[in-house]
Length: 196
Image 1: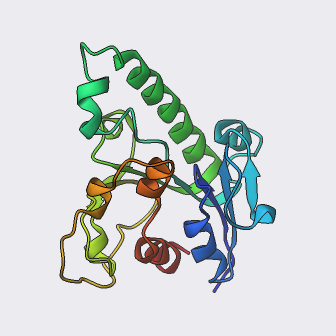
Image 2: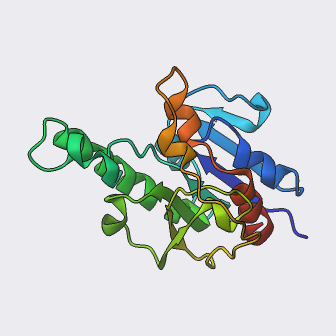
């Protein structure tokens, strides 16, 4: 298998990064937060500035995990039209469009992951696919969209029973946002096996 250069944006957990590393690829994470993984594989900085520093098509694959708080449809109550947070949503959309366009230019293939979100109608992708954790070995629900550019759709790897809404039911806590946004290991493995 040929080694590919992969950048996982807005990921401090390194779950996806490690899945690619475990398969022999040169993978790095990037986030403004420090990583909980290997700091030698992590860029702690603004992803747009990092991407802008590379030549076009430098990365073989960029996977984007932009913060969904203000863009998720579930946040319409706080960020929809006519709410005090609507301007924050518009700013998040504009930032994410810039991120997407940079990633498409700086890589051969790009994926942007977000739950059911308003962002997808603003991106120039080739395919939009929705996946669930139960398609990849986790008996849970969390409908997640993948905007794909020069990538095939992700194929389910382990369809399992169970439709627990663990993410939705998480109680308030210091790490709730972080824990809700982590990529399921089965999905990370599918990214690495099918796109690496």
